[in-house]
Image (tube, rainbow, N blue to C red; front, side, top):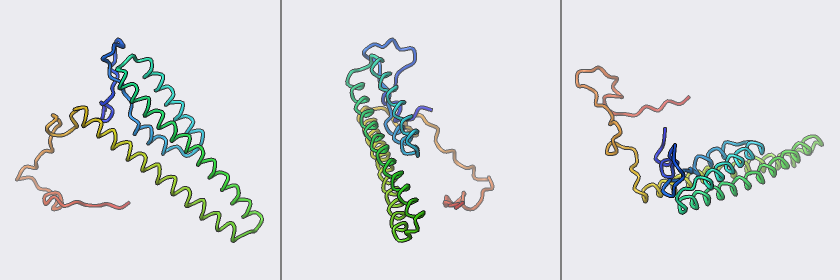
Length: 183
């Protein structure tokens, strides 16, 4: 399914590479993949994927302004990947230091290091989530500026069907109340 964000810069299949070809790149998608990567090897895989995407955009022959903007986004995500590699390395070193402290019996130092590792990881994850949200909002603004219609009833998407009057429904559905299920 093509989302509104991915439709902003889209390479059309079978295109001849003329100057009117649109360029496709969603930084939010790669930021999400980057946030999901928990090992340095996974981050390197995301970086390789970004490099391939950059090469594809350079070879597409698309609109130079769109290609330049897409390459800027790729460089931004690459910098974030480098930051994550650095942070993961620091976390690994702190965990090794924690293990050494536990092995030697230094309980107070081990407790302090354990809290430090946990806080560092929390801050890294929070920062990554903020990067995803910020990138997605920027792409949404670009879509609004470009005039690509978003999904909705006015864009031709099917509207929510009304429930016929004679149909039996649970009270929550009939009244429009929301039900939260905690699992």
